[in-house]
Image 1 (cartoon, helix red, strand yellow):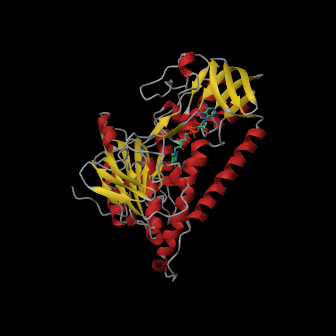
Image 2 (cartoon, rainbow, N blue to C red):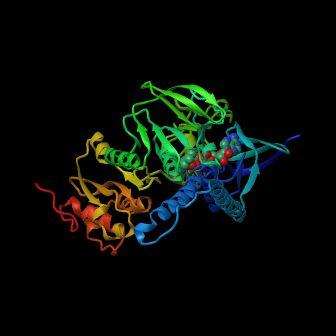
Image 3 (cartoon, rainbow, N blue to C red):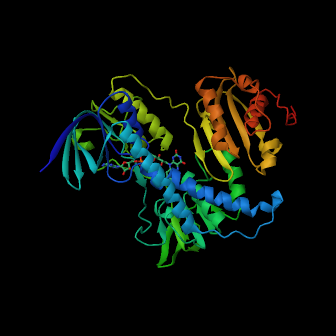
Length: 468
Ligand code: FAD
């Protein structure tokens, strides 16, 4: 027998899109039900952002110990224990999950554990262990996220084939690993396993690694990864797995070479969770990749049905999913909120890190905008040298006519934090001259942003002027 209830807003999916959306709707004073079939926090907290950053923090500590002598400290060769690192990662995820559960409770949000689907635009049905639950509602927000994309070339039942999810559960360090795909996820896994001592080979279909980043960053990062011992094949695919063994595999590349490894990790993108949740039946429009089509207020074509996060395609990032969640909640509650997609910082936690926001020079050119670019190298910055982290640069992109900041790319220490000064500048339509004339504390990494802003006008103090 099925039970029933009523709530003004029902959110399906408790990832960073869904749980943030639920909290915002509750803050606006309404009854909210959040439906989650698995763990609170979704991909981000359990299989994505947080687990990868927890492991990267371990390998950063490992590298710091290895470089100790540079800082005048004598230590022996450190011994990584991947099992212990995985336990630490799991404990961090658990702490954060408990935190979300407390926030839901404090905001009086009802959490329903089970698989949710749309039965009508104003009705959600949840399959729970204890039986069906029908929820009548005024607004539904779909926040079902995504899963690792799989290719028929690979047999994912083989122990040697990993996705980003199973790659985060290894407790033994594999001697060799092939990583298919050199985007954000592939590059972060390469950073972790290279530091652990695995011989990493990356195979990328396109002509450069990190293909969505600025070309200069891709080139420099390739040199840095090569120097660390990571082998990189670009414009190459895996043609066939010629042999699966219990302890490894042999893969034939499109250039004819055969590679052997204990593990092969597939990181070729995400497939969106939009099947089997009643969307077609209710008439919600889907795009060619299965993404839910929404407008800039996160409304689908069906009144009262909203969608946010990875399942709408586009920018697959946790903070963007949360922003979309806030916007959808406000619209569902009768406010008029729109997304501002000019400012979406994107960070890659390689060593060194990468942070980018807004337009890079190539994207500006595509849009027919004439730009000026100011660059500053971390090699010229006292704080970076003191930290022993002098690789990389800041690149500020401004409108050539107005000097207004349009974009920023940072590769270097704490790039993921530094890029937010430029994000705020873009949001507030600030100019390079305004950033350059803002006093920045010394010695800090943020001085690099000020110097890059001054470089736009050829007034950079700590870099020799470029010859005209
Ligand atoms: P998800 O986080 O996928 O959550 C969806 C939730 O919905 C899940 O909990 C799922 O169980 C639930 N669900 C699905 N279907 C149903 C249903 N029918 N009924 C009930 N519940 C359902 N992004 C960053 O910004 N920074 C990073 O550093 C970063 N690192 C990443 C590293 C990796 C390895 C990966 C894979 C991703 C990373 N991402 C990162 C991307 C980020 O994790 C996602 O963009 C983000 O989690 C999307 O949030 P979401 O709420 O849309 O979906």
